[in-house]
Length: 170
Image (tube, rainbow, N blue to C red):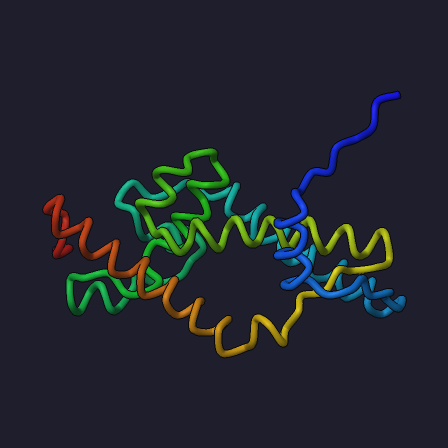
């Protein structure tokens, strides 16, 4: 008889268990909430799929009727979130390299949006959720990580733009 081999090694399972908590049974309201989260994530990803990415690497949000970025107009440099919508649209059109060039943080956030969509649907359907070990992760680490992701993406966008000669925008 053939036995199934574990997907994760014992060391990997130990690390995963330290970051993940126990399964938590969800109430009906919890299942509805996770379904709502999934619907919102799905709407964002659907909108990104429907948008045509701007070839400049920023400005795709203008197709939604939003004004051009005032930071770009005033300084000629990208703002910390410049290229987020373009990055989402590029990734949803199957162009991960262009998505990362438009805004690396946006590409990461798009992937996280897909993950939250799947986790939310699974939680809504199955009725339980594997929760994160927030004592280990901590809100400060989470927010610092998010802030560093945004700053790193912004720094990359500025460095890449200066290196390629597309900055300052004018």
